[in-house]
Amino acid sequence: MLLAIDSGNTRTKWAVFNTTGEVCNQGACLNAEIATIDFSPIVFGYERVVISNVAGEQCAAELIKKLEPYKLPIHWIKSTSQICDVYNRYSNPESLGTDRWAALIAAWHIKQAPCVVVNAGTAVTIDSLTSDALTTDMLTTDMLTTTNNQAEFIGGLILPGFNLMQQSLGRATAQLPMPASADSAQHSDIFAKNTEDAMCIGALKAISGAIKLMADALQAQCQQSPTIIISGGDAQTIKNNLSGDVTNLVLIVDNLVLRGLFLIEKFMQKNITKSEQQ
Image (cartoon, rainbow, N blue to C red; front, side):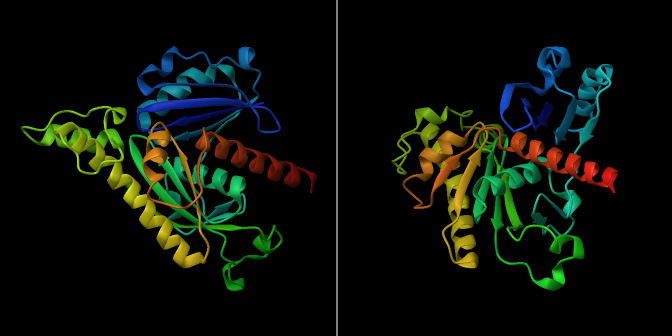
């Protein structure tokens, strides 16, 4: 059993996976509430921990304080140039956020086809995966021995999330209100009739427009319509708003980052076992 933890900008999500990748237990809290969470392995039965943390040193320190007493192996993942048949084409692969990296790996193993991967939280990330064939001169001998079913992360976008866009307007302007709920806006009517709806619909259209542009660009590159995979707290709101704008298949996948962490840790443990057997 494995405990996977995803500490994002605002909230920390966690799940306990069995050996086949099924979620046995899960939860979430604000980062400021980590100290209140019971991660006891006696309760949840896990033997290892894997963590993606993009929330900074204070959040990392809180997690260490909670987990160290259990004396179990902890793997703090880092983005790499390749793992789990996904190749990272960032100019500096290690600078890619570990949450984005884990989400990309999970998305590829779900679809194994070109896709736009959207994480919709405090920030929105919109990343492209393509299954275009890798040229032989890009591959090492080790890579050539792996499966041919491989993906490339070719790049992506980061923009403020739905609430953050509205909050920035409310804080930086004298007469605009603080954000309204997404559910309060008439999403189908771009001709907003009040200021709150204008801000809400403006934020939604900015995000959905960026997703559509990415999907169109990826389709032009790979000559097939990519699937759009969305995860995060605002996933359903964004999917609802996208439905009239794109013809692509749009999927919501819960716990995409956590699923990617499970796959990364499974891959690492398999390689450790192979090394020990040699």
